[in-house]
Length: 296
Image 1 (cartoon, rainbow, N blue to C red):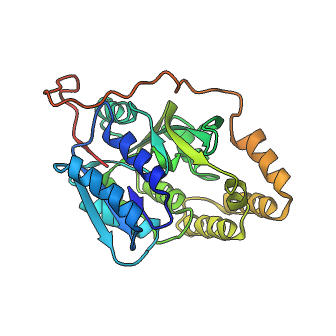
Image 2 (tube, rainbow, N blue to C red; image 1 turned 30 degrees about the horizontal axis):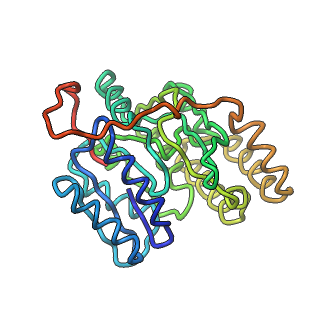
């Protein structure tokens, strides 16, 4: 997980809690502080560090370098080969880690595992939409030619394969898409779990970000990178770029309509309300004997 000074303390607290109270808790947790943080954020971080002294480790970067470079610092610091990524303002459901690690255990050839994600309103906590992604390798590779086939908030991956592929780029936006494409181009195998394992926070600014010129430029830059690397052809480079430019140029209501109609499922309610968090106990747990340790 990486965090920077603009993060809200309450969001960071909820995010950290959701990962450290997993039913299959981490044996190693790495938090990258991307630049100087506020006192409020440091207080929260210190409290978790004190409570989870054996596993909670902090990597501090003097200046803000962006998500990509911060993630690379975190990857190098992780002690385990399986890394579960987490954003500092999202919420992992209690069984996220066990379900992702079980899939790695059953299919050891996999290098990346993700899932569906639930978008929820930051003000009301109500479900806004479900973002689905393709499940199997063939469909993931095909989908990646147009869009990111993994929800970045849900991604777990093999450290050794990520390093072999070159890690994250230093892009300020869309670095997760470029990372997924490069992993696949380097022979990585992936699969998505067909259920919600992470809740993604959205607010009034989300639609504005999705149609911003900054995101549009980053999207085109990523597509150009994977085009020049030979992962996609000209048609797969050109068509999505035109669509992204349309989202940028047309009115906000059109952008919202496109997301509701084509890019999200707004009709399915995920079964998250009845999920209970099982706080890890001190006794030895043999339920998951044989699973490899995971780091965050």
